Image (cartoon, helix red, strand yellow):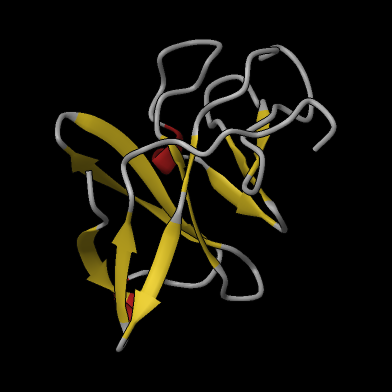
Length: 111
């Protein structure tokens, strides 16, 4: 599937996240503390909680329910209780619009 326009760059505040759904897949669209935009799976791998309701801290999104932080570039949890990663999606910005490809990236175990 091709990348889908989900919002404008200015529709997301710095250090915050919003939930978008593409073809039934919930995705957390995150603008990190330096203004870069990332897309990761919106459902916490530990407790079926919406990650977009959590907290953005540097390069991670923290689940508000149990505190697991997920790296925005790899989707890997940085602490327990989560131990499974969430998917990461390619983001493209064109003319101030944010596009997300709903096909998850393949992240190596070395990342």
